Image 1 (cartoon, rainbow, N blue to C red):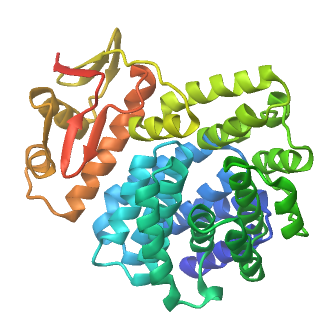
Image 2: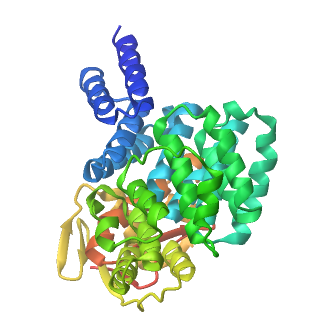
Image 3: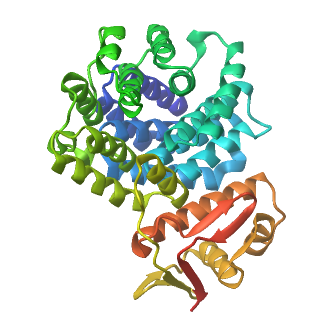
Length: 414
């Protein structure tokens, strides 16, 4: 009975989300969670609602809870549930500026044997979107060709919004404005959620302003009956479409409701189309500041895309003790974080090592996909817990089968 009631409430919340009633949906999901306990899919939808409501502190808390559930119950999760977790974690990581980890989350599905073709297509769409946003044209084109080839096997009405979104971005980047507009016009006949339609429209509008020469009037002539803006980013885009310029104050009046990635996107538009020179200067400074919280790979890619020069790195010392971590003069009690301390201690002795060796030394186990995922989540949590104190976007780097201490970090035993 409890399971049926939880499913009933979850379905009710999904209908509320479809209507854009995110506050009601969040209340419904919270009620179900309190009454019937933890459920990963319910938790994911609650996290979506908190993000759409602009309650970003709560959103980040729930994101960590999702990671914990995945880490603790991975071997018990069905491929469908695990896929949902990877897909939404990837999207949420994008909003935090952690695009490298987002790519890994999508790649784990694209390369995983347990996932279906449709699930792989959905995460391939994420790879396309991230590569285009970061300005990685070669990787973006390769993934776009792969996506457009695979997706032909499915009917348009069965394609999820992520696939339509990425195909629209790809067509804009590699075919042209008219092709992406044609995709949008076809897609809007099959979009159920009001927020999905506005996402497609305003992201397409953003692309129009990013590419030169800007053809605002042509876009408005081709796309009639635009949807109403839903969030602060879309309100700013609507104003930019209307008059062609934005003040810094208009753009960031509700900055506390925006993720760091959304603020960078909007900052780039103000840096180019700010009403006054002071607006453009403030936006450029904001981008430079926010990129410091991004992972280094993404920060460098976006700095190159935006034509910015990032400041040179300073070295931060981190010392690992038996029950604590010292960052400069600050000591953190990690008595209960034995796995994290074990990994940091290993890397204090060996600055870089293969993931198989890391798994062996930390968990005393042979490497497999499950331990690979545990290692990925462990690295991410260490980065999140230390980056604000160390003033570095990344402490550890996991890439190409190796784990290493990031540049600008001196890691030693206490």
